[in-house]
Image (cartoon, rainbow, N blue to C red):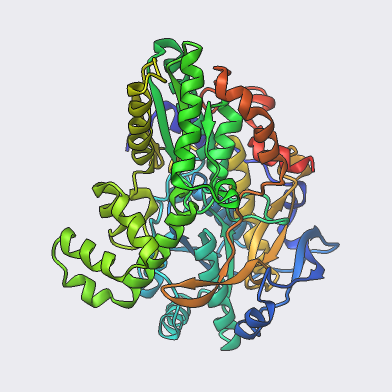
Length: 552
């Protein structure tokens, strides 16, 4: 296999560990903190998780004496969408497993959770793992979105683990994947299988976090990758001075990516879904605000600009949110009938007939291509696939129409030439930044410590990430403390609550303080490419979000 010069150089990078993880694994122990409770509906959650609910927070600490070790076999799964650093989680886990006992095994389940159900495995060795150190992607064992949600599946998981003498499974994933991990851990503990489950917080969206999980891995690299591209477009726009660039950014349920990229690049407009929802802004009001800035800049001779649009925006607009909820429910309750409708026209007529009066009006007013995208196949959780909805094109179409009206009225004398972009997959498998390389390696290494100490239903946690690695600490957070009850496919289920942008948090308030200035002035900021070699203040610095949240 051929490797690029950067790949070869990254193979040799030695990720930095928190001080507590640098010594003997056999001396490490855990210190229990306060007992925990769910974020909401605690009584319901505790009923559903009687064996694991209320577990204490855990801190990894150095003990006083070493204990003899025996070989252990651990399974690892990559679940859900890719995020930079996933390979390093496996590398950290692998190195800890082998350091604990040279005859211990790390067994990868191929293709995500379905790999457990189908008994598709790969024993990871030095030769295999060394080819993936500090590289992007999930291709070492592949990923998948199969949900583990019923007893039949759980029993198969237990049988497959026994077949390979696996005593623990590490599930690397986002909020839904870690919810699955918590459910599996509960079942295994109730059935006294002796198999533990530990989760690792992954998602570039940045919405798997709380007071104890400061950032999900991949967010750092992805936002820096997008910000480089946005900065490049800003430089081009400021040079050509003739295009308005509407850039949609990944982030289905939260605007963390959009906010972070705005803090890194200073665009003219950055829409924050959570603020739009709080203000109950309609689609027309959003377009009016965009058009207002376009006109103000045009009056200054600046017929160009940058608009950042979060992927999930459409679900936060009040009338669109109601419409999408109604469509999701209709499709979940009438899935068999909907499959019999062969054309879009038939589907649209049936949907329109069964929507409420207000939602029917909204649906009918949307462009044909947006209607089609709203009726596409749902994701595994029964939700509309927002990445397929071209919100940036919808905003362009509506803004163009509004500006044409003003031009005809003699109120706009400039030029509006829009371009559209979607940055998503470009950031999911990038070479991890030094921050993500270190963070992910530490998460994987620490996951083994939690396993070795007999814990289950926990998410591996590394804290103090705004500081250099020599100040990082390690521990574990019970998954149940992050849960609430939400409707999925028409039914209420326990899920880890997504962390949305805090409108009273320092990252948003910092953006809010600057955005009026950025709107009118071309005050663009060019972060450039991710740097891997050089001074720490260039190569190891975390995101603006992490830095700002640490100063609260």
